[in-house]
Image (cartoon, rainbow, N blue to C red):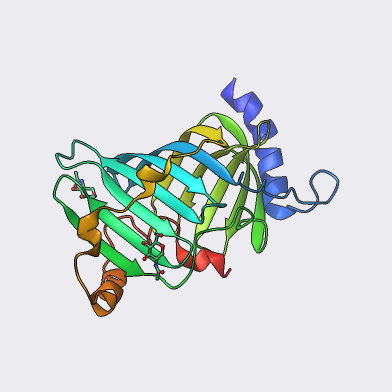
Length: 216
Ligand SMILES: *[C@@H]1O[C@H](CO)[C@@H](O)[C@H](O)[C@H]1NC(C)=O
Ligand SMILES: *[C@@H]1O[C@H](CO)[C@@H](O)[C@H](O)[C@H]1NC(C)=O
């Protein structure tokens, strides 16, 4: 079975590697823009460091929130709350700790992947037949061919997010976005904030979506 099917499986692979533009009608598929609002549940893996995350994306609201539960963490959840005005808040309510960062750029727009991405062909991910794109060597993105939902993305650091559910249009109420009061207790945050950027938490790429992919 394996030996007879292997050449058949190899052929499209080779075609994909050698002449990615020759497949189909010659026009590469474009990634589907994100809906303006969604809620996704993610399983994240950073070199074996596992976590569950709720991702709330709210483009009209100019905000993007990851609520992360690291495996067996006693102080979960950890929040990564990013705003389009360039401010990000990272906080752990169980410890009442917060760091803020002046990131300088906003959140990803819904079409962030459309411009400047390179189509890598069709590859399976998690059992789904996917279109795959890479952008600026920072991210590889897998989208289900049939439903156009994201299935997986992989950062150049190795941090991988598996999309377990994807609810288009889901909205987190305003209270869920409010950074806690202990994020606002210090007066001059600017210099120490910038230091944080150079020492990210494991698996954070200056926040969960690497800011440089915006400029790719
Ligand atoms: C950005 O927006 C958040 C949420 O409204 C706010 O807390 C923060 O102070 C703002 N940052 C700047 C630099 O205006
Ligand atoms: C995984 O990474 C997070 C963030 O750096 C850390 O808080 C957590 O302790 C790590 N988990 C393990 C098991 O090392």
